[in-house]
Image 1 (cartoon, rainbow, N blue to C red):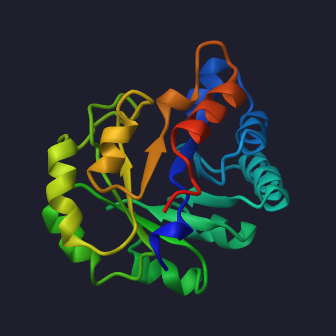
Image 2: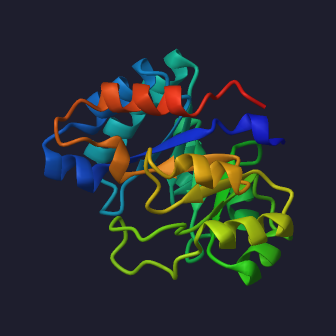
Length: 213
């Protein structure tokens, strides 16, 4: 797998944030793919009920019809049921364990420092995430900030596609890409106060040309 397999703009569909904004996750996903997003991560940290699964299944169908990848946060079993990829944190199943559930599926793996990046070399992850690059409000207990210069230094520790995450906005995304990230994962800056997710995603797609090498 090479870096072209991961779109440069990687929006995260955070169900808790969306519900606080009064936006249905399926509607948000529709706006994202219609605006040009080619990968989505479904991030649901609460209990995964039948209703949540049905919601994720609708989003999986939207993504298939749009030719976009869907990644489920944390849950390899749900990903397998939906024909999606999975993104794993340091406290989840390891990629080696998840690979038994998803033998051919996309697997991403979060890292936060040099030690974790080096350890990930032994894992069958298709891409690695690194962060937080900047301060973030999307996690209750965020890891220490990596920073742009930290990203530049750590980039050399892996040849896997590297997705930067944490506090990334339209204002700082270019600096992150220039420091070596193959893709930027975005949560808060995808959701404007106006609720016009389509417009914001379209801005991101224009900002980060996904066709560029």
